[in-house]
Every structure is written in C-alpha cells, then in structure tokens.
Length: 483
Image (cartoon, rainbow, N blue to C red; front, side, top):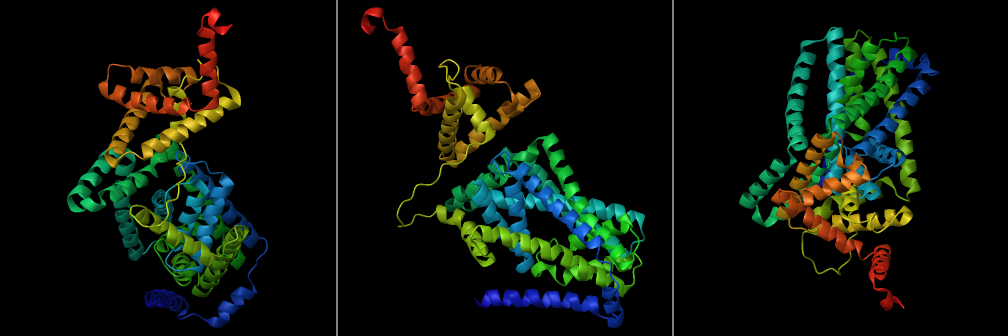
C-alpha cells in the first residue's frame, strides 16, 4: 500500500513539474483571451471525428495482428484498444496496457504473454511511423540542436528494438533454442516456464512473418497516425493559426514520442509541455500554444474516456475492477506452473489456428468417407481442437521441434506453390500433406505421421466418421452375411 501511494505521489509530482514548466512565464490574460476567441465549430468536432476513426483503424490492425492465433472482429478489437486508452487516461504509468491485455485475453483466448507481445509490436510500429513523421517534418522546418539530439537518441533506441523484433520475426526457432539453453544453464528449475513464455511471445509475432501482411500492418499504422495528425491539423484554425500539415505533423510526432514512456494519468503535464514546445518551435506565441495544447488534450481525453467507460460498463465492470482482473491475468502464467492444493479444474482447450484447421482437414479422409456440409465443418473443428490440445501438452523440447518442423513445412509450401498452406485447394493440400507424410525425408515422415495418427484418433471418435466407417464395412460384407 505504501509503495502504491508513493508511486501515485511521484506520478503527480512529475505531472505538476511539467505543467509548471509549461505555464511559467505565460501572460494569463492572453491565455484567457485565447480561449474566449477560440472557434470551436467546426474545427474541434471534425478533428475528434478523425481521431475516433484512427481508433477504429487501430482495432482493425489489432484484429489482423492476432488473426493467425485467434478470431477477433474489428469491433471487438476496437473496444479492446479503447479500454486500454481510457484506463491510461485515468491511471498513471500506462497501466491501461494491463487492462488491455486482460480484455484481449478474455476476447480472443490468447495468453497474457502473447497479448503483451502484440501490444509491444503495436508500440514499436507506432514509434516507426511517428519517427517518420518527425523526421520528415524536422527536415521541412527549422529545428533546434536539442531536437536533432532527441531524434538521434530515439532512432538509436528504436534501432535496438527493431533488431530484436526482426530476429524474433525471422528466426523464431533459433531464438527459442537459445532461450531454452540459457534457461537450462542459469535457471533449470524455471526452464519450462521461461521457455513457454518465450514461445508465447514469439507466437505473438506470427502475423508479421509474411512480407505482404507486414506491409499491410505498416500501412494501417500510417493511417492511424494520419488520422491523429488530422486532429492536430484541424485544431490550428480554431486559434487563428494557418492550416499547415508540416506543423501539425511535427507537433503530433514530437508530442506522442515524448509520451510513449509511462507517465501521469492522461499524460497531464508532459503532453501540454511537449505539445506547447513543438508549436513554439514553429513560431507560435507561447500563450496561443498553451491554449492549443489544453484544448487538444481535452479533445482526445474526453471522448475516449467516455467510450472506454461505456465499454466497461456494458461488461458490468468498473475501471478499478478491470485493472484488478488484469493484475490477476498477469500472475496466471506463474501460478499455472506451481503445484497447489486447490481443487482441480479442467482448463479450456486451446483454440485451433487456421493452419491447424487446414492441417487437420488434410490429415483425415473426409472425401473418401463422403462427409460434407455442416458435418464436415464440425468434424474438422473437433479434430483440429484435439490436435492443438495434444501438441500444447507436449514437453517444451518436443513442442519446439514440432514448431520448427511446421515452420519449415510452411516455408517449403510457400516456395513450392507461391501461396500459404491454408490457401491451397483442398485436394492439392491433402496431396502435399501425403507427400510429406510418405516422402523420402525421414524427419518429414516422423512429423506428419505423428500428426496424422493423432488426427485420426480424434476423427474416428466423431459420430459422422463412425457412421461412414460402419456404412463402408457393411457394403464390403458378402451378401449372405447381410441377409
């Protein structure tokens, strides 16, 4: 309790320090006059619409990022994003990211580690785009030596993060092997827990492993920040300033880069200071720049907080309850590896991915048994769920081996057919599966025969498959046995 209180006090003091720096040496009469003469209509409503559209695009981006592991509609993903921003507006240190992770886990079935990894990917993409805006704007307008230093520091930090992200995207197998060996050497008792979390984190990067999909996500990120830049742009004429996209881009990028790190609730203080400084650099009087920063902050703070609060209220939750649940969710990975005396409860089976569904469909004799329509869909879903569950329960090293094998298989498929395994027509997909299961490569045979055996075990437990098997057996009996 004492630590939490000290944390809140420190966050408040930081916000007050930035706010004091922003208001120092201001002419209060000029500040009040600026507010009185501000033209709210139509500039502020139009800017807010652009900003809210950006959150819809954020939802689309999130839905695409998790689509390899879970099915999430754009509407649900947008609600997840908005809840995170609303909690950030009310609590310090970006604690909204925890509430966001909890809600993403609840809506998609992903693990907490995967959810936090996806959030990290989004933040890195945001930093990429913001730096691009900042760099272009800096080149097109006068910049101080301090801003050039800030840009170089930000580029250096982003470069380190980009290398780490690139390694995780392009070489998941070697990364997992390195983590496993390091855990074996330095923390053998926690080996399985560490490796499991590393595997979940690498799974969160799955969507970026295809160049076209990575470019799609980057494009959505550019749209997100273009919509936010429209808010900054449309607020300029509200205070009699010229509609200059370069100034808006510079203010938007420099302000948001400054508040990417954990800060005060709603970034009160740091937001006003850095936004005001950006406009002063562009030649705006300090009092007008302060008025602009205050109204701009209200324009993004109020609508998103109301929207996020409405989403939580519709779920029967308060902001505090959502954050409490997110802390519980964060503790689940550690608790799940401990042996306790609590009563046993069945864990929900993992949701099968699109790849697992396609793999299951290729492994079982649906066409030979004449199973089609809704029965086919239901059988494939059951088999894929069972297959995913059995693979999930494998020891860490075997699961890593299967993951590496599937990665090689998917790469070979892409090279052979110039498309992914899931996009192949059904007959070709089955033939390609058979080629691996009964081909010349011993490792391929070991991998895919194990998958097929497991899939068949689940398949012949399905009523539709048993009925087809019984019908086939009856047709093969001699006539005198059927009389």
